[in-house]
Length: 258
Length: 346
Image (cartoon, rainbow over all chains, first blue to last red):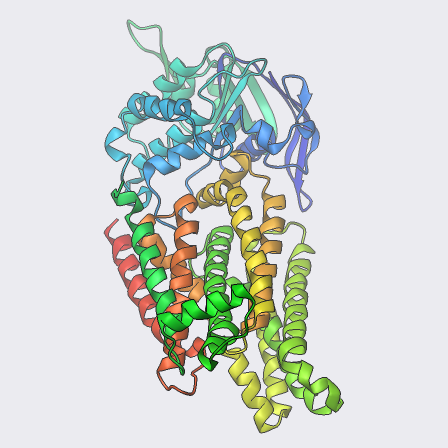
């Protein structure tokens, strides 16, 4: 369980987040939605341990984040940032191997290579593994980075839950891979797994999220099961647009049209 | 086995040995294999050198070649460290104030030497110049670190920018010292700024070899953080790297590396910038392969440059910095263009 209590965060006097309380339960896919600049990424960075100068409490499995070292946290928490350029040539398999860094000292073990191999197979990126990362397309880069963060939390850690943060992981992906990625994440979620992601498309949240969190101007406006809480009035409150909820005929599904 | 992965190490090691041998034998005075083996035998038997050639070999050539070998390795590793830390391929070892601080420190000694009591003058070359250069390098780098730290959060870009500013100040301080200096002193400053191994002695070799051992051990600790930093500082943090601590460690060891080498041999430009680039073309950016290869190739490149510095106008010498920049700059431009083409394809 990842608990955020009374999170308050300012950057040079400007309030970014105010009084946010969330319990991220394991075994669930959590999605954060909100307009640009609403504080979604700041929330992700605070929860993952990247931002330290916030007010309030963050705890992993009842242990305050302040008592967990960077190195220890990295063995069961991974984070996919938004795209970042890499200034030097680097091979795809070298990059994916970095996901295993928190788990070995100097030399990757046979098990590390097995995990990398399994992920490369699973994500169907075998054909990319000897390529230079910088020559890949945006979507391919995104899939490779996803493989890296998946490698980091691939195995269960005794007595610990695992935490996977994904900041806009669907960016640059065509709809086929967006769906594929979400399905992969769904399969990957086990009882000890907390997945927290920022998405923009509200329909992916309706279709895949166990819990959604809507943020506007640093305030948590609503949280809960998407089917139960997402309504045209909530969407209008957060995003300032008119919308309709439509049931897909013959399927137990809903889409938001706006 | 002789697979593709190891080829670069084997080939560069063989090249290094050949260049090393040539560096020992060729120079203003040539030394034969026989004289070398004789000198080594006499040294271990405790006898005095039987010819002037043995003396040249033991007291001049060998310390010079070894100092050059170790300095080349250290400067190249330092270049890899700094380019990795700053995630910038244009950074060179002394960029954060270290070289300019050393140059300013040394220039003070050259100018003040005129006013020193006569019994101190013999200490200027072997002791005072290295001491002032070292202190200048450390102080300038510390200033860079302290100034960039006083902002709310230190980021590497601010260290780099402050470094450029302090570098400019150090260079202008040195320029002023050159301006007020008399001609021979100004020549000394100028010569020192282009680097030379002509003053090498065994004490320097001893200190630099200890430094190199420390560097080699630190490399093991730095491989993973430097690789993780390729992805970005945030990503490295999420991979378990304590960024602030790592930054302090690598800046500290890098400053000591550059300050010691520079204080002994002067400012040698371009090696720390070029060698990492050359090596990356062969082994990629994985620091596990990059650092050892940079060490071997850096040593070979600097030895070769020193050999040219000694032979081109023999028996007089050209400062090594002229050779490294003259040969280094075209290679650098070539690599840069090649890289740009690769990028534009993607």
